[in-house]
Image (cartoon, rainbow, N blue to C red; front, side, top):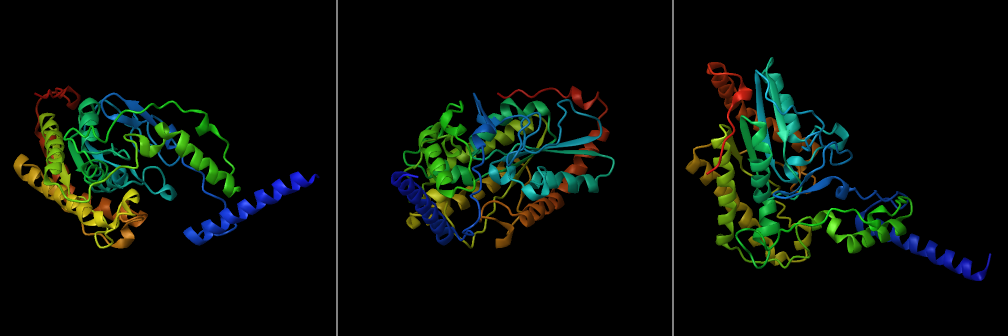
Length: 373
């Protein structure tokens, strides 16, 4: 073996040792462990002309989806069936996420379905998980208008707040239509995303991750809708809350026009931690503005419920161990969230069943499609 080859090998080993040592010190990971494979989120979503992007049908891995492209693997029949209650759950990743160790339907909407099915034996309970990571109230409104409404839900659960706050309301140059921070991106998977995975070679995997982020921006998860790093504002602007109110109000009105009961949930996190989203962690002066937006959006949800005469539920507070990162629910949090929602939703489900039994006109599938306007 030549001296040049030995030199290159020594450099490679040194880089690998340095990468593993840094990872161990910086992130507390075992020195000998492999690097977790990057999740192929780019392969889990499709572009959509109105909702920006949606889950691809029949997805697997960390972003499982069913044949209609909704989170989880439970089948959904488009046509309504007798003696059933259909609940449509909208939101971002805090609705979509599940516990991989417990299966693809362990999200809190999935667990909610299980709990309600136990309490209403003999009734088909369907909780459609329409939560999509990164969705704001704008995407959920569009998605429901063009897809969800056709599934004729009886109840629409709305759990929105944080994505509006940190990806739109706090982005400099705010525009009420969110066009300052949302835009379509191509979904063609390029060569950079097809580089082989070598999980035991930390230095290579780190380099691969950096190259993918740099050259594959259009297809990276965080670039679904914008081009970070954003320039974020560090002061609360009450005018930026108005579009959130508009979007949620329109979603509520559309649901009501479709003869569904909209239910607004107060959004929760580990408030005591006062932790910022990743791209704001280096700007602690933005903390007050961030939490001011979260609180203002929650106040708006309560006000909308009163103005539109629809239910509003307070499901918190939650303990720190109910979250994995102060925002997304832990396995314990998913279970607790489902239980709290089920307890408050039970009377609404019972009322819905009563109304269905009292209806003298044709089958549920004959329910006319609502028209907005």
